[in-house]
Length: 150
Image (cartoon, rainbow, N blue to C red; front, side, top):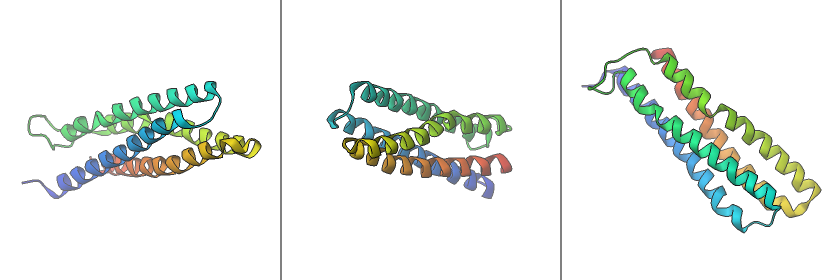
């Protein structure tokens, strides 16, 4: 039977996985919408590439969940250990992409002011970006809690 800490750890990892899903679904939505929006092709290719890179980083982050489960003693087949390094590594995995997202949202907002034709693109990234930033905050909160209790 799981201990109180193990239940807490499991819930935090499940919440993080759900937040990862939110980020991935927003990236998929953006990628689906990009081909239909009127914009400069160089910009479109940059955004498509950014989405693909972010998606890969998020998938890599998701791959750390089983590792953390093992280190937190949630997998019988693995010996528990200190999750600290894995938590730190996981926390850093998408940090750069989240910073790039913030810069991208700001740049697109400025672009939409100077060229109203980019307003829809700006709204797309603003709305999806807000969802992804909220999910990132949830992930970081969970990782922080795991590092304190692991």
